[in-house]
Image (cartoon, rainbow, N blue to C red; front, side, top):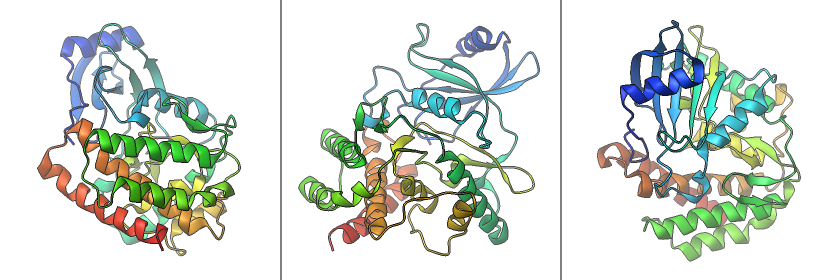
Amino acid sequence: MDSKTKRSLTTAQLDALAIGALGAGVVTAEELPDGFANAVWRLGLDDESQVVLKVGPPPDLPLLTYERDLLRTEAMVYHLAQGTGLPMATLLHAGFDDPEIGGDWLILSALAGTPWNRAAPDPARDAALRREMGAHLATLHRIPGTGTFGYPYAGLTGATWREAFLKMVGAILDDAVKWETRLPATILDLVGAFHRNAAALDDVQAPTLVHFDVWPGNVFLNPDGTVEALIDHERAFWGDPLADFVTPTIFSDLTGDDPMLAGYQEGGGRAGFTPTSRVRFAMYQAYLYLILLVEDGPRQYPEADYARLRNGATEGLVRALGILTN
């Protein structure tokens, strides 16, 4: 989707980045339209390799508070996931605070498959994929943390999950005020809904690496319908593993017969399902829908493309608030 955060680079700039990082020049360059924040190109190099270049927003562009150093968060996930068996691209180079173009960028190995959201519907395959995705989430959630919750690069952290998550919520609500976002409830009502239910967050005692963006567009498929790779890890944080079931069920809900849950348990996952799980899940749904609504402020999506997303997020936020206020 078009976004103000996606910058343009010349062919000469793309060539210079590739040569400096990999020692090979650019022969072909295709800008990829998917994604919402970073500019992405698929590059064919003169050593006959194919790579993907991701370039972060201009460093002087105002963003949401949690979006500070997005590509550094992504690079962190790639480093932490090495050796775990998670299906991912390979991080080939990371450039931070680049003096030539400004900001951060990554070069990744190119994927050969198809995004799940572009594959033809196939109920049997999709059920198997959800089961496989559950197992991959279990692997991700076994990556050890450092003891701190939240977004380390954005400074939204805490010694407890309750402290960190309330900071994350406070930041997105501050952003909503800054960008004058239209919401289906007042800021005071939203603050109250989260804080009245905050004790449920105390069930989470150890920080887990949470992707928080595992929707079908971020899952690439092999020709046989299995998962080739999970992509776009920049929204990751340290928190409650239960939060990672929100984006795979976006605009709907998590049900007990979801194959993803079976795969998660088979993979050794423990998402902390307790009597407060429904409340915690609704809090994470509300947080995600707030992000989707507020991010239009700095990104300025084309209205024709964004209207459906806005409507879905608004309706989802209302449903989540219904659970939190009962």
